[in-house]
Length: 314
Length: 258
Image 1: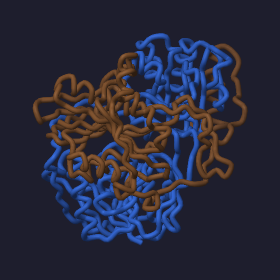
Image 2: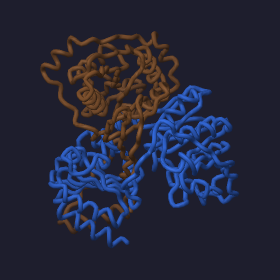
Image 3: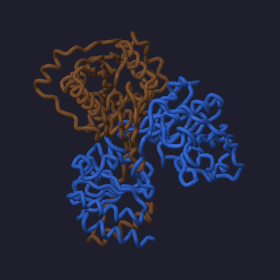
Image 4: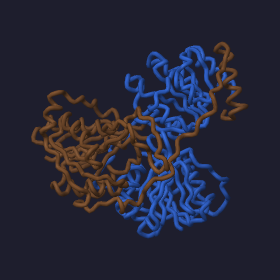
C-alpha cells in the first residue's frame, strides 16, 4: 500500500493534526509519500522522523499562497507519478475544497471528518448528524480513497529518528480562481476544531461585552473561546465561533459551557468532548445532563474566580 | 441566465436521532424534514441575484424520494425560485453519485451561469457535493462564502477559514458558490408566494435517465451508534471561590485534563 499525506505545518514544524495522520499511515506499514504547499513547505524540520520516502513541496507560483484550485492541480500531478491507494489530509476548509475534486478527477471515493481510522485493514468511523450518532464508513474495494481526518482525534506515536526524505518540487496552476486578499486571523490561539480546551458562552452572559470574562479565563490555559447559536444569532460574536449542528463540531479534552442551557443542536456539536463542565444559574438546564462537572451559580462571580485559579496553575 | 440552487432535505436540527433495529441507519419515523439550513442561504442569494438581474431564471434542484423532497422544492419556489427539478431517487447515493446526477441534469438544461449550494448538509456533513459538482462541470468554485460582490461576470467572494482568517477570491462565471451562515438573511415564504409556488413547474427526472444508480456508490455507512451515556454530573457546591477551587482540583486530579 502506498499513501500520500497532505501535510499542514506551522513555523517549520508539522502540526499535531498531521502527526496524527503520519502515525496512522506508519502503523499500517504503508509506503509514505507527502506533499505540502506554501512558503517553507520544502524546509519542514521534522520530516525525517516519520519514515517518509519522498516529499513534494510546492512553494512558488500559484502555490505560494492559499489556492484550493492550484493545490488540486499539484496533488493531481503528484498522483500521476505516485500510484497511491490512499490520500490523507486533515479536515480543513481548503482540503474540503481539494479532496472532493480529486475524488472526481481520479474516479475515487471521498469522505471527510473521520474520527477513527485504520488503513490495514481499512476501518473508519465518523460522526453523523453533527455528532448525534456515529457510523462506520465502508468504501468499495479497489477504489482510491481520499480521506479527511478531524484534528485532535487520533493518537500520535513517538516519532522515530530517521533520514530526511528526498524533496522534490511540484507546481500547480489556478486559472479559475484567484486569491486577492488574506486578512485577520489569529495564530495565538488554535481554531475551535483543533483546540484542546474550549470555553464557550451562551445567553447567560447577558451581553456581548461579557465575553471578555471568557477570554480572560481562556488566556492562562491557551484555550479557544466558542459560543452557542443563540448568541451568534444575536450578533454578539461571529459565526466562526459557533459550536453546534449549524456551527462547528468539536471534541476537545475539556469543554467549559458558560451560561449555555444545552439545546439539542448545541449538545450535538460538543457531546464527544472528553470532559464537559457546565456553569449555569438554572439547575434544571439540560446541559447538566451531558456534563461531567456542574456548577450552579452566577457566571459573573465564577468566571473571575476560575481565571485566578487557572493563572495560579502556571 | 440560468441559475441553479442545489438543495437537500435533512432532519430538523431539533430532531432526536434514533437508530433502526439493526443499527444500519437512522430510524426516520416521525422525523420533521426541512431544507438544509445552509441551503437556505443559497436560495436567498439566488433570489437576490434574480432581483438584480430580472432576466435570470432560478431553478431549485434536489435529489431524493419524490414523496418527501417535493415539499423542499415548493418552499424554495415559495421563497422565489422560478421552477424546480426533482431527481427522484429512493436509493442511498454517495456524494459522487449525487454530484453526477446533479451535473447530468444541469447539463441537460444547457448548463448554468451560476450554481449556489450550501457549504454542507447537516446530516452527513461531508462537504462533498458542491466541489464535486463544480469539478464535473469543469467550473471553478468557492466554498464557505459569507459575502459576494457581483460585477458583470466577475464575482468577489469572501470566506472565513480556520483561525478567523478572511480570504477574498475573484472568480468569473460560470461558477459554483457554496454558502455559509452570514451570507444573507433568508426570507420567509410569504402566503402569496406559497400560493404561487403551487403553480410553478417541477420537472421530474429519474436517476436512470442520468446514468446514476445507488449500486455505483463507493461509500456507504453502517453500524450506527448513539453517543455513550455519561455518568451522572458531579455537582460542585459552595460559594464561587470554593466552587472554582474545587473544579480546578477535580479537573487536575480526577479528570486529569489540566
